[in-house]
Amino acid sequence: MSILRVDHLSYTYSPSTPFEHIAVDDVSFSLEKGEFVGIIGHTGSGKSTLVQTLNGLLKPTKGNIYFDGTDIWEKPKEIRRVRFHIGLVFQYPEYQLFEETVYKDIAFGPSNMGLSDEEIRERVENAAKFVGLSEALLQKSPFDLSGGEKRRAAIAGVIAMDPDILILDEPTAGLDPVGRDLLLSQIGAYHRERGNTVLLVSHSMEDVAAVCDRVLVMNHSKLWDFDTAERIFTKERELFELGLRVPQVTSIVNSLIDAGFPLKKGALTVEEAVESITEYLKREGRL
Amino acid sequence: MEFIEARNLCFAYEEADDSSQKTTKYVLNDVSFSVKKGEFVVFIGHNGSGKSTVAKHLNAMLTPSSGKVYIDGIDTSDETRAFDVRRKVGLVLQNPDNQLVASIVEEDVAFGPENIGIEPKEIRERVDEALKAVDMYDYRLYAPFKLSGGQKQRVAIAGIIAMRPDCIVLDEPTAMLDPKGRDEVMNTILKLNREAGITVIMITHYMEEAVLADRVYVLDSGRVLTEGVPEEVFSQVELLKRHRLDVPQATELCYKLRSCGVEIERLPLFSDDCVSMLKEVLR
Image 1 (cartoon, rainbow over the protein chains, first blue to last red):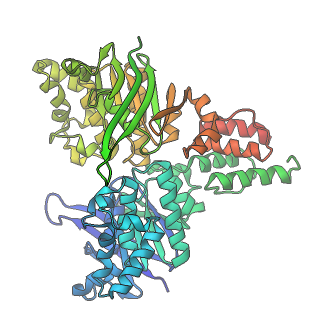
Image 2 (cartoon, each protein chain N blue to C red; image 1 turned 90 degrees about the horizontal axis):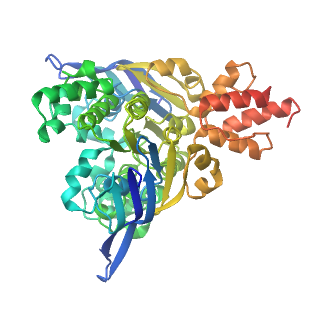
Image 3 (cartoon, one colour; image 1 turned 135 degrees about the horizontal axis):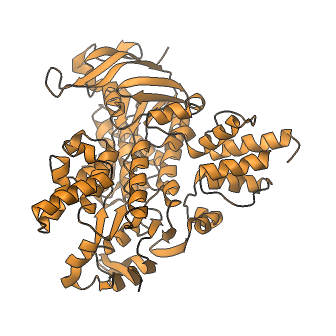
């Protein structure tokens, strides 16, 4: 059974006013347990609104969200519990750090879950380890950390709640290539070890192509497509029309295929493209 | 002297550690560079390499701890000339939302010229001209919050253009934009540089943008690691990787194919170039 099922979900901002705006329009999809899913779409396509409805921060105007078979709004008073299962890391989460120490900040989520001090300590330490924050940093003020460290501390705060589904809204925005690769590999390691479901919202097609199994494409509030990363990124022209791109290396391999070379479709990373091209040359006996 | 010259630029601050011992931290350490009038120069480097500090020195938001920065011959350390420096060099920052002040696009663009006491009739001309230059003239009566990220950033650029600077400095102008917005802003920057002859200095993390420049400076730990035309800089794949910097995927692909024994004569910077090269190799 799917861990999350979204059924004809719509969300309208300021309904019945002149500012009415349908941000999510009749979206349906399911997520399987343990999947790593990317969400892409132009600015204003509804990505952030969608993920905020998924963890119950926004109540759908229409439609339902089922977590483990149960409608998350079945008991509206218990919506907070849903957020322990479906954790959301906002854009620029480092602006939300507020505690005296990094430790306390990461512990804030779990300490609202009625856990023992011992359990909380264990969770904080594990979460810090996942995002590569040293023990020494845990006793510092979050405001003394570098930008990248702050970002990772904020993500650790959500990981520490051990959610079944972890949603990250543009976690690498504004990071340099080193910070970006480090954070992505940490999220990847977290996903592999815990086997949790991860949803990654991103403007970086390279990041999504490199780490996601399936990709959900939003366009003007509607779900445009939801398919494997390989299949989504072969639709180069259509994505371009939507204001999206494919990774440069995918585009290069797509062009070579169009030119008649029998390469493997859907090379998403430089490594896959190298493999695909060298395999072809070897088959032809030229390498 | 070139239009912009930085000579042995150092920028440092004192930091007290736990035992209140003062140590000097160098953000920029003996950085020299020059930019010709009309050039398009990109600075790359990872966070903390000193890129943004360089940008802030170019319109006298910061002045050197030692060394000199000259803008069109004006020493930026001369406080009495700071105003002249800022009229020559306009700065565009990462987040467009922090740079727009008015509730209507054209009023926002007029904000700068109004502040330097331009005649209303000329303000009108400058605003129209600036909005046309960034292809946002049709949106002149829109509220900025109704625009996409790329459109907002182009309005922010128009606000700078309306000041008629000789040079614009852009600090990661595309970092917060979606792919289409990035393309729009890059096309605008290229057009301003090539058609209007405005000198452009841009800081970016995207190598696909850096390859469009006339010249690239690579900063690492407050020093210039290497400098040159994009072909020269990005052919040094090992050096850049050692300093944990990226190269464009097209370049990396050909570099890796070459190390697998595929005959690659040179490393391409662009998709099209890479595709036509590989077509030859595979044929």
